[in-house]
Structure formats: structure tokens, C-alpha cells
Length: 80
Image (cartoon, rainbow, N blue to C red; front, side, top):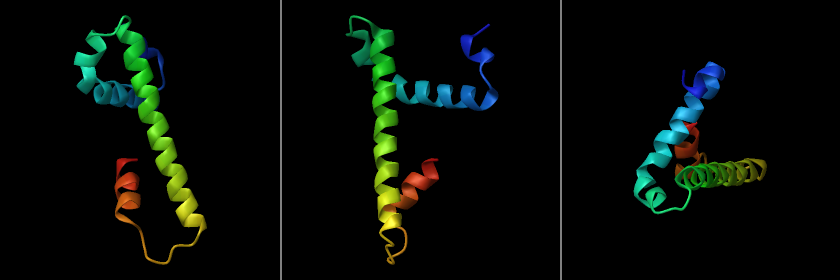
């Protein structure tokens, strides 16, 4: 049994998506002393980047931009 099978289905999906995203840097992880930790830190960095992007969007929305949605805003919303 994979460890993710013990998670709720929605979390399983998220975990697999993040693992898939971080797999593109396997070559870098292979050079790390602890590849699993390197992949985990990379996943955390990805999530931090997403969180910062969402903070920017919320800030823009609170400022009441009347220009409509920016390209970055639309792209970020599509990714979630």
C-alpha cells in the first residue's frame, strides 16, 4: 500500500500533483545528500511561491482594480 492511500482523496490528488511538479528537478535532487529532503524543500518553495502570488492577487482585488483581471491573475486562477 502506498502511503498516500491513507490520505483523503482530495489530498492524494494534491500530493501527487506536487510530486509530479517537483520531478522535473530530479537531476538536482540526485546530487543532494538527501534527495527526499531536497524534493520536499522544493515542494515547499513551490507552495510558498503560490501563496505569495495569491497574496498579491488578494491585495490587487482589495485595492479595487477596475481594469478587469490581469493576465497573471487569470493564469493563477486557472491553475487552482
